[in-house]
Image (cartoon, rainbow, N blue to C red; front, side):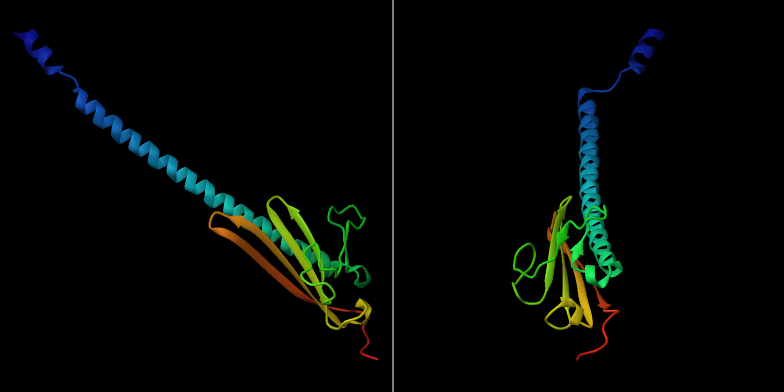
Length: 163
């Protein structure tokens, strides 16, 4: 009698119980994988937004620290040699040729950076009392194109007034 009671007590799990446990485990794993994918997408978009803002602010600060006579020259790789000369010719990020706005463009790591220098009056840059400097960094995110804009006003330290 003792043997019968021992064997009946060790019945184990049925096949249906094992299937239900596997289905619940798989549902939990699929949900966790979806959460990781969503988190990765959010981190990637945040990284692009941060990179775009840093690039735009960096370009603004580079323009603010440049001498007035070198305002239209850009040293993008910081080796002391100008890599780009800003033009008002309607190409390379410049919207309209001859409108008085000088533009430069640079693409890096999924971010397109366009910066402009707009003098307060037409003619040579030295005849302008101040310039408006604007940088726009555009990038593609999962919800469509995004853009970061920053700008500043820079006074000509050598300007003595109109003549």
